[in-house]
Length: 290
Ligand SMILES: Cc1cc2nc3c(=O)[nH]c(=O)nc-3n(C[C@H](O)[C@H](O)[C@H](O)COP(=O)(O)OP(=O)(O)OC[C@H]3O[C@@H](n4cnc5c(N)ncnc54)[C@H](O)[C@@H]3O)c2cc1C
Image (cartoon, rainbow, N blue to C red; front, top):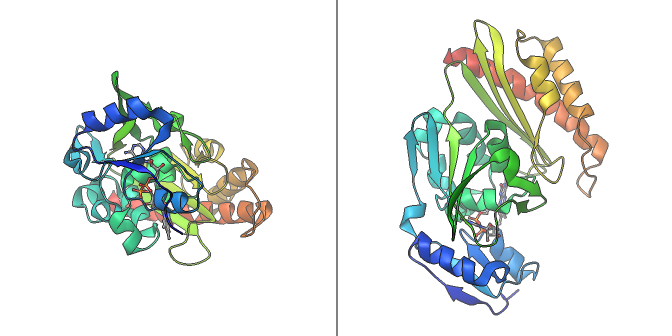
């Protein structure tokens, strides 16, 4: 389908993009990689009066590491993040999730900020951000604010970003020693959105689990932290029985939607299986990194 008529601006600086957002508010949409927005426009599911194309804003791209955090510019392409040695070393959970997004052609245009601003609950990066307590940096007419991941995802394709704010950067904490990770998902075909996905990060200290983070994708209108399983795991030594109980708690704590691809009950079973798999892989990975 053809795109609807829409006005177009291509600012070269964040300040210009923010001024345009302040002027046009809800009437404007930010265009990043376009991999979600363009199909929405073609299907008339989004009908902004103005597209603010941020592809020409160089300051929005790049990966840098400082003080135990890795900062990723919102316009950083998914494939560039996938190839970043800094991300592979410091945020291995993100590195594990990135190759699972769609196909190479999607990742060559799609951006880290675009995925997180779009906030599809079945997407990989929102689950990673939620698991790791990432921080979202947004810039609006009155300056910058930092939003924790726990407050970023508000509902289906909805974040706490205000209409006059631009997402400029996302910061992920660097993994500490003894931390192992896993990203697991079940999708109908390679490259499809996950029916259920799970981001797992586990830290081992002196043989016991000192930190456990699990976030599910595809089971709600937002990515979901599995606090009941995390609480169970911390302080314990890994075992099949422990992981079975964590899986039970994870499944008991969710009420996934049913759709054409699978029932709610099926998604619960998949979530439980992924928790077992994710924990096994993350613990093995942590033992290798100790
Ligand atoms: C065939 C296909 C398969 C896909 N499979 C997957 C998959 O398996 N997993 C997955 O996670 N994704 C998948 N995607 C989506 C892909 O990851 C997109 O790249 C991503 O969701 C959106 O990123 P984008 O840069 O293309 O954003 P755009 O499409 O340009 O924008 C998406 C939304 O975010 C807003 N936005 C973008 N950047 C900013 C910003 N800096 N500040 C404020 N608002 C902003 C836009 O206004 C828009 O509302 C798939 C896409 C396609 C077409």
